[in-house]
Image (cartoon, rainbow over all chains, first blue to last red; front, side, top):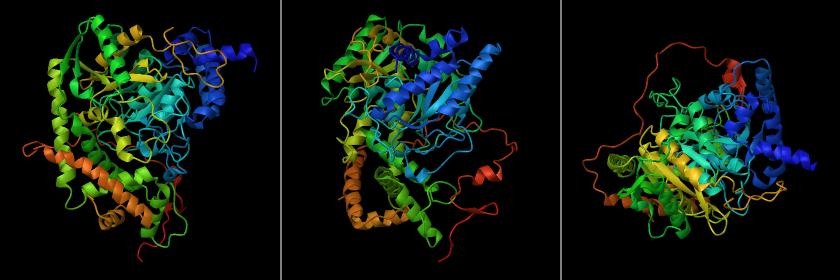
Length: 507
Length: 94
């Protein structure tokens, strides 16, 4: 390709959501040009990254042309007009395959859009494709996808995290400015940390789950990835709010997140839970997060140590409750109404067993088995009921902490990105990747992962900001203040196709 | 082992899954390791603690108003097999 063409396209793939919308509205660029740049970038780098399982070039071009026509005709533009978005392949999209990383949904094309997808489209966002994920969102590395590996753009020998690894990697590799993921135990925040992007899990109930294929219904929540806090705030603004089609969606009014992030960190009371800095924590992760906490203090926040004493019980509690809910939710995949049907079954019972056994991968089977066990006769009280009671204790820990402080700050992940294959045969080690994130799902709290530095090996480190229920505005406010001081965003991974050298760290 | 091979076979039947002998043994080993970890919860006294089923703010029920459902073509669009507007399955009784 010609040098000038590549540079022009490069510029558009580095614009954030707000800049894209503003420049389209001003007539400086077209939505069609933004989408072409984005599709070109995907064509250049995604073979090396593997973030996308479906790219809808035709649909994206048509949506962009409609935005451009609206602008020429002087019709009002939505708040995300012309912003390309990628969707985790667990979010239902009308006429576009939705396979949840599973052979069991090969094929499956939903007849409807998830509510949050419909809201994104209404806001003018352009769906360019669907991203790879751990099968049914079960995993922390995206290695459990039945379709392909996704590689971390910062080091392609390493995982992007998971389960929303495709969405995180797509944003980190500048393939799209915005991607949507889902988070049941850390599946937005952990890949955001490992890929050096911003990822937000909203409060349980803040964003509709209608059309989010269920893994664990009491824990699942969808949210955005972006390269900037303001972009993530703009997307939350578009997707948050009550949905009559989801009885667990919350009726609380949606605040103005853009106004919130302009307020700075001054006067915020931050708590640092001592259980989130255990002895075994990676030293570089601890140092980077502590240095960001010092930045917050300098910006006028107060910082005190707090305790969440039941933290060590969160992983076992999570793996009881999440697997129990999964075993029940995944009972629907039986080869009758949609998805994979095993050939040659002679009766209905063998159709169920064979379709499921052929369709599900090992981690999904492991979790269905564990969930079926903890719910089975004779074990229910010892495991499931016990887990629900410990969930209460974990919630109370947070209630007590939030009586003292406004926000909590912790590491997002105990390590930086690990190597592909490193943990795939050790389920328990993989589960411990989520040690700092599952607590929020159990308590229903909002949490954001913000890139706060890189390790000596050049891998991103993320810090997690935790808020009270529905306090996304406060979470975003601290994140924006820290982001401005830390200045992580100009650091980009080096990738094939990016001909100019990436700016050095610290620029 | 926190769980026996026989229990793994019983749970597989309940879950409508089947495994070869090697997989059964691997699952027995892996599920035992996970259950051993889970048993750390036994250290906590939860006698007087209420269970939490979900962290939501309570169901917001909507008005029960009839709306047009998916049409037949869309509803059957993903069916592996259908006939005369119905999902088709092999015989139910053996």
